[in-house]
Image 1 (cartoon, one colour):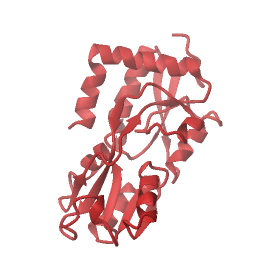
Image 2 (spheres, helix red, strand yellow; image 1 turned 90 degrees about the vertical axis):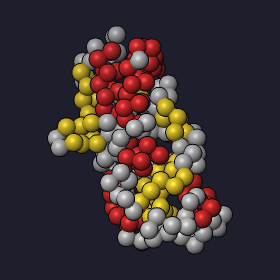
Image 3 (tube, helix red, strand yellow; image 1 turned 180 degrees about the vertical axis):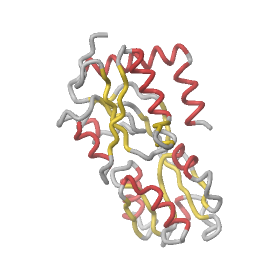
Length: 236
């Protein structure tokens, strides 16, 4: 396809782990929607796929990797926002999703939506699109405070919810449905709090790679491969 990459013949893809079902490690093996999508995209482009894990505390820092030449693209369940469009260019969105609310149904069975959080602390991850939503709720007096966790500490955040240290957790619905499967005291009680479009990001101005990835996604959509991945990972 004639696409230029940092390492010739290789598509270096940054993902913030763990963030299942988008990306996570199963032993030594990376798995998830973004993993399989970008493996398929790389194959469409005649490139090898290479995962570059991102581990900083603030998710938005992942877009700084373009300036330093660390990776070619970001595929990490990333919502397209006006702020992020100043840091990166996004390919065609691959899914629409929204923030969800998780509560501890044993400790706070009365919580069924963000309208029931008055006086409680809401947990979010640093740099996640749930963060401005939570701050707005705090400014409106609808929650007592926001507790911000490092992006990699999603497990710690859910542990705190299970222990009653916070009143709720907000994050994209596919992730919360996945993360609460083995936590019977935690439950997704509200979805579609926001309407967000998620997509793969490339360096600002790298239109050739943006178009190439978008075109590859379109071919995967037409072949049925992309809808199968969505069903497998994001609608399970």
